[in-house]
Structures are given as structure tokens and as C-alpha cells.
Amino acid sequence: MGEHMTTEGDERLFTEEFARFAKETLEEWKVPGVSIAVVDGEDVFTQSYGIATYPNKAATSKTLWYGGSTTKAFVCAALAHLIDTKTYPALEKGWATPISSIIRDDFVLKDAWATEHLTLEDAVCHRTGFPRHDDSMFRFVDDENGGIVGRDGKRKRYSTAKDLVRNLRNLEMTAEPRVKFQYCNFMYLALSLVIETVTGKPLGDVLRSLIWEPLGMSSTYFALDAAQSAPEHLATGYCWDEDAEKYTEVPHMSVVELSGAGGIISTVADYAKWVKCLLHEAAPFSAAVHKEIRTPRIMAGMPEQGRDITMYGLGWQRALYRGHLMYTHDGGLEAFGAQVYWFPDAKFGVVAFANTSTTSNAAGAVLVYKLVHEKLGTAPDDQVDVGVKWHEMIEMLSKYYDKGVETLFPDKPEPPLPSPVSLKDLAGTYYDPGYKNITLSVETDPGMSDQEILVGDHHDRTWQISTRLYHVTGSWWVLYADGAVKNSSKFSQEWQRIEFKVGPSGKPSAFVVQWWDRIARVYQGSVEFTRIGS
Image 1 (spheres, rainbow, N blue to C red):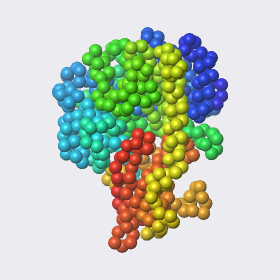
Image 2: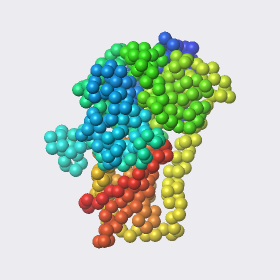
Image 3: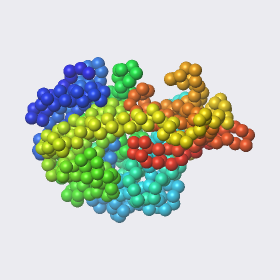
Image 4: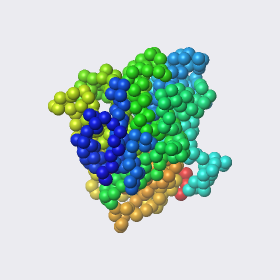
């Protein structure tokens, strides 16, 4: 792990004992490095531990990290400001403005009522009826003038938020609008287009002029190439390879198509300025905008881990933690995690950025809560051990993953029924309008050299995954999807039920995936991929 620690903070907060605790936490969760910022009243303190980039580039308060979904709060604040100015006729209905009234051609859904009536407020608080559908996000689109040549030989370009929003017409809703909380990144892409359409400017330019420049956030970027060419160092993302017992570098992720759902790259020092603005209800926002930022819109979770009922509003979760009002949001990409917490009554906030997928959110939460407990004077018996909670979740997911077949197919016969179609015949390219192409090929099982399985190619996706299909019984298969790096955390892995359909010719005609978000426990609907080629 190394002995890297960059000291820039208050020794009352970042003590030697905390430094030891941070080092142990990073080692426990296999996270190379972390940067932390604390806002305490008018004061800001920063501290960093570990490595930003191996072999020896230490993390500092000026290190750039991906902010992931913490981007959403900036989008909401900007939109609240645009509404508050009352200078944009398209926003005269405020949060009740239908999305389609602004981006009519792009925002088209399968449900006609939802197309006409879903509002800006529905989108910001995830009550549209859409689940995540993250696996349908694609990084490239065919374009004869594009500068990229895909594996299929076709010319392509990077996709944009607009491309992804226009794909909503091909995706299913899984709940009625305004009935339940279902987190959906797509809706923040739609909000990004709304802001760009209303202002006539790219979203990054709007955020910079409205928020970042007034707050002095000069080390905040909205594109990978801008961050890579910046004077600040951009941290490298990693995954811990459990088999090799070493860190594997993960290529930097393009954030073009993620836009307002997760496109920010910044430093903890810059984010401290943002949190301080929110705590003190300061400029550049009016009192009315700050009130909107703090207003909850929908219930998002039941009491747990010391929290009362969690509500969701303008890109923030709102809850009481041991009687203290708290706003929080995390962010996660393929190899980065972000945590932002602020307590208005205590005028206290904490930001933590780190460089692994998901485990950095666990490590960040552990470190944040230690600082929070110290500030709030939380009695030891009342302190929630968030590390234990994360370990319990990992253990549960690992158990389900390792017993994926038993979990998904509790009634499968023994011995299993043979597949009605050979493995070779099942191979080919399948298509769904929303999830696009998936090509299945026959390969040797990496875990069993004497067994052949089906392997899926998803190189064109925003979220880089590789899939393995194993026969269960009859026409039923189980799909395992691995994250950016094999042998990494179970958090980056999925397992789903698949059924192949056979046509009158006896050849496979389609397969259906019953898609579940395992962590959120949300059903994302059945997606049928039709066979289009061998």
C-alpha cells in the first residue's frame, strides 16, 4: 500500500490516529488512495492518503477524480437557478414543466401519457417509472463520417446524451409514474438536454458559468480530454484482482455520454467550495434556489443504518442521522467512487474521492462517518459501523452470486433437461431495439478447460462488461456479467435468467433476459433479443 500521506488539513481532525485508521481502511477495502475535504463552518481542511497513480504518485487535494453521480446535484442546482430567474419562457411552469415540451423530438417514450406528462420534477427525483437500464447505454453509434472503426468494420463516433435519450422510446417502464422511487440515470441525460436546449449552450459551459466560476472551482472539468490535459494530475482507476492479489489498472472512462448523470471530474478542494456554498446558502444561488435544493420530493428508502426515512430531491438524499439533518449522494464509475455529505444544522460537510469501483465507496463511507461521529459527538453505542454493513452486503451478494443457479432456478429438475438446440446453433448475433446487438460465441470456460460455454461481446457499451452463459435446464440458461476487470469485486458482477426461444425450423429465434438490479432489488423488465445473424 505504501506510506503515502499528504498533509494539508487540521491536525485536530486529521490526527495520527486517523491516519492509521485511513491506511487500515484503504488496505481492508483494497483501495489505492483517497482524498478527503472537510468543511467545518467557515473553515476548509483537506487530507489525502495513499496513491493516486502507481508506482508513487501520491493523492493530494489537487488530484483529479471522477465525481460520478455527484454530478446530478449540480445539474439540479443549475436548473433551479434557470427556473428562478424567470427569463426562460420554456420554463415558465417551473418544475411542473413537461420534459417533452422542451425536447419534443428527443423525449419520446413507449407510453404516450408519460411522454406528454412527465415533468422536470419527476425526472430529478427518479419517480418516472423507469428503472436504470444502464446496460443499454452504448458508447458508440454508427456514423459513416465517424472517426472510429468498430470491431464490425463500420465507422462510428462516440455517443452523446442525446443519442441515449432518443433510445428511451425503445425501453420499458416498470412502474407507473409518480408511484415509486426508481433510480434512473437516463432522466438526468434528458435534463442535460433540457438545459442545453433552453440556454443554447453545452451543459459543461452552463455549469461552469453558473456555478464553478462563481465558486472558484477552477479545477473542475466536464470531459476526459480536458482533465487529462489539465495542470492537475488525474488519478488512475484500479480494481483489485483477487486471484493475482494485485491492482489492475482500468483505462480512464469517457464521460461524454454520461453528461449530467455523471460527467464531472474534479478535486476535493473544489468540491469543498460547493459544499460550503450549500451549507451557508450562499451565492451564486438565491434563497429560493437553496430552499428548492433542500426540499424533498419522494420517499427513497426505509430507516436503516442510523437513518430515519430517506427522501430524494434535487440530486440529494435527505435523511436524519441520529437526529441530525443530513444530505448525501455518492457516485461510482468503473474504477472510481465519490461520497459527499453535508449537515446544514452543524454547518459541517465531508467529501471523499477514491480510485476503485464500489470498494472506494465503502472505504470513503467508513472514513466519512468517522469524521462525522467526531464532529457530532455521537456516543460510541450510537455510532453505526458502516464497514460492517458493507461487508454484510458483499457477503450476501457473494453468496447469491456463487449460488446463482440455485437462486434463480430453485425448481430446476435433477438431472437437468438437455438443451433443445446445440451450443453451436445458439451462437450468433441477437438484437433488441433498446439494448442493441449482442453477439454470442462458443468459447472454453475459463474456469473449466473441458467445458464450452457461450460468451457475449459488449465492447460498445458505456459500462464495459463481459458475459458468460451457462446451460441450466431445457431452454433456460444463466447469464453471468463481469465488470471492467475479471476476478474483481462481486459488486461489479450480475447474474440473470435467460430463456432461448426456438422457431418452427428448430433453430433459435430469440432469447429473453429477465433483468434485475441486484443491489437495488429492482426488476428492470424482460428484454427479448431477436436473432439477426449467425
